[in-house]
Length: 318
Image (cartoon, rainbow, N blue to C red):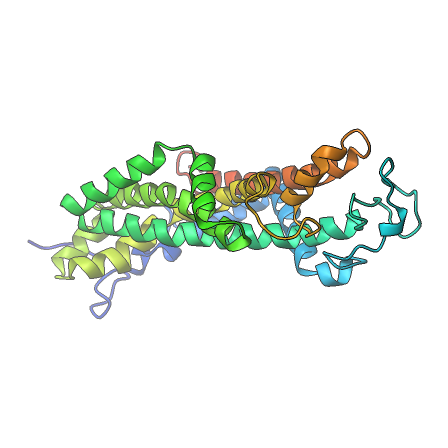
C-alpha cells in the first residue's frame, strides 16, 4: 500500500507542511487558514468592536498604577462619609465618580478592579484550558476504555451547572482569589475536554493522518505532532469565549462572599457585594461595576464569536 503525499512534503519530515494547523492551505491556493481568518476579522465590525473593548480593558488593567489616582485599598475620603450620605458624581473635587461607603475613590477602585478581574479571568481560563486539553488529548488520542472513562467523568461534571460547580469547589477550598481561580478553572475543564476530544475524533480519518500512519509514525507522535495542532482551533475560540464567562463567574463568586479579601479591596464583584446595602443612598456604587462587567464580557464575546465565524468552513466564502 502506498500513500500520495502533497508535492511540498520532504522525505525527512514525513508529513507535508500543509498538514499543520498554522500552514494549512485553503482550496483556493491562498494563504494559511489563520491568515485568512485574520483578514476576515479585520473586515468584521463585531470583531473590531470586541477587539477595541478587550484592548481597552487590558490597557486599563496594565496601566492601573499610572491611571488610578489612589491605591486599590486607599480610603482618601473617609471624612466625607456620613451614615445618611455618600458623595456621588462630582460632589467633591478630586473624586469625579464619588466615594464608596468606606471612603474609597470609586474611579480608582474601578481601575484596580479591572486588573483583578483580568488576572482572575486569564488564570482561571488557563487552568481550565490546560486541564481540559490534557483530558481531551488522552481521550481522543488513546480511545477505547480510556476514552470511555474520561468521557463518563466529563458527562457527570457537565450535568452540574457551571456556576454551581464553581461555587461548590470554591466553598470547599475556602475564601480567596486562588480558590476562585481554581474553582472557575475546574468548572471549565469538561467543556474544553469534550471539545478537543470531538475535534480530534473528526480529524482521525483525515488524509494527512493516513499518510503519517503509512510512513510508520508512532500513534503518540501522530497524536501530538499532527492531530493536536489541527484540532486545537475550536478550543482556542472557546477559550476566548470562556474569558467572558470567567469574568462574570469571578464577579458572582465575589458577590456571594467567596472571593475573600478585605471589604475595601478593589474588585468588581466585591464592589457589587457591598453596594447592595447602599442602593437607596448611592445606586451608582452598584451600577458602575455592573456596567464594567457587562462591557468587558461583551467585548470577549464579540471577539470570540467573530473568531469562531472566521474559522468556520460553513461561513467562509468559496
